[in-house]
Amino acid sequence: MPSKPKCILIAGAGIAGPALALLLSRNNHLVVIVERSPASRTNGQQIDLADLDITITKALGFHHDFLARTVGYQGVKFVNDGVWASFPEKGPGCGALVREVKILTGELTGTLFERTRGEVE
Image (cartoon, rainbow, N blue to C red; front, side):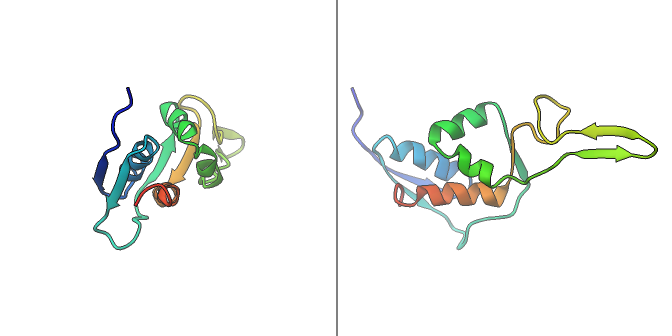
């Protein structure tokens, strides 16, 4: 039996707030996000998305948005009279610089914020 829609207030428009808001609004809840910062926070480290992260972004329907905003590494080779070490652009496990998707925090939060427009207040 479906639950009655609820009015939900989320404090914080970083990464978790908008992601949760999207899930809740897609289940017919009225969601409002409040944020004390006057602008989107764009500082922070790069974020790697892999494994379950990829499954979730695909389920939410914005995996391709993240792919379009990736950092864009091309791999690294350390050379001196030959290749000493090589790290490919992408790949499973520890040998690659990027396992799946590497995105700047500001790009991630910006994408999530854009996706909440029209679905979340």
